[in-house]
Picture 1 (cartoon, rainbow, N blue to C red):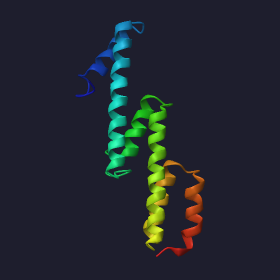
Picture 2: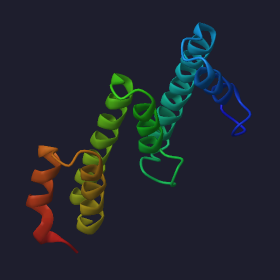
Picture 3: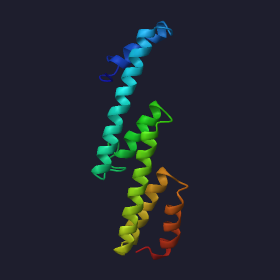
Picture 4: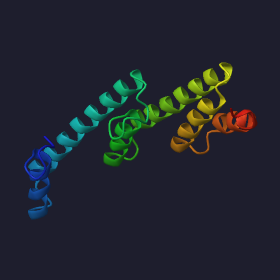
Length: 135
């Protein structure tokens, strides 16, 4: 539906809409393609959380897929919830690292979480409380 470039359903529906912006068949087809893409990206994002591929590998991780959804539909609650779950994972990983006295590792997890949610009060508190312990 979206591959290969310039020869897929999405591309052809977009081309039809360039010629006739009121083409209801192309509009409906494009909506279906986008809905399928969103469904696929959400599934991939959730799968990557399960595998703890939160921000790595590049272009194949939970954050990447949830942001792809938000590029297609900016107010998608499932993608927003997915990003929140990633931040929660980073909080858990950071706390576990601090208990194990792996302070540098814990601070890296905090920084990754803050890349997603820069205003997260729990991450900011954890950072403040553990910044001096870095080993």
